Amino acid sequence: MYFDVSQDVDDELHFSFFELYADQAALDAHRCAPHFYVWREAVAKHVLPGSQKNMVGTRMLHHG
Image (cartoon, rainbow, N blue to C red; front, side):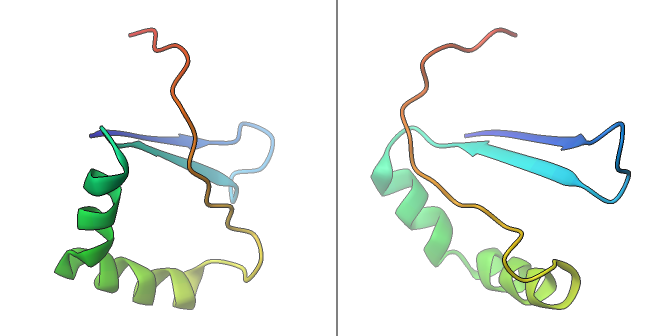
């Protein structure tokens, strides 16, 4: 799993979270883990509704 958090330099209240999992099974396991439900509760309280975008894609390039 790869996890990254970025803060927008022009809007200090705008954050981007990137998570990369090995495959769909790893993502599904993450979403079933107890800590995921704690995270969802926190998001419901602190994230502007409609501002969150979730997607599944294929990693094309990683530069580290």
